[in-house]
Length: 290
Image (tube, rainbow, N blue to C red; front, side):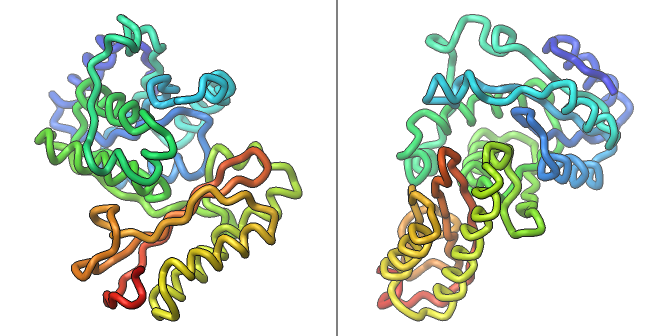
């Protein structure tokens, strides 16, 4: 496995594989890898013979300096895990390499509409930073495929739209959320949970799954279902951040044209923010979407 921190060396290594006619699947990460990341890599290996992974903690997508400073860095363990599953190239650039002139003058990429709503409202600038770094990494690696987890549903939608809008010849492969046995969606943030919190955390998915059943069965209005979900989470010790039920394609309000909705969950357990989502097929009825 090649571990490369230079864009020039990365391009040269990729070029050799392309000259051999080998397709490339690329998985961008910020490190601190868990089984969810490894699942993305393995899915990519089923699609293409060459596997490239990046590890870069992107400062542009953090709107809190302390979060950036405290983001866990486990490069040695990450590389060991990637080598164990047969990754060909790991790209580990520094911030100075990616943003040589600093962030203030860096050209950025932004996907309007999809980036401005939901998580975009809660975390201004986050998706601009994400889109910019993914675009830059795509230009460096020039992969044929790239795997993204469905757990970060809005991120996946934005990347797909960006690739489509900029005519990149890359197929984005969605990969289902990887869960622990308890049902909790795997995340690097789970490491911050105390034992007590870890035992409570699966309640988020439990509430979400019941909400999905109620939405599909049209038991009552979405707004009332969300209110009930808030109350259940609060009673279980969560601090609610946001629960949304929106069109799964547009991420906008449910309309008469909506065929699928996505339930987007975000709540704090202690100081740890957990997110999850579930897509539900519906037969739209105005009485139950307000």
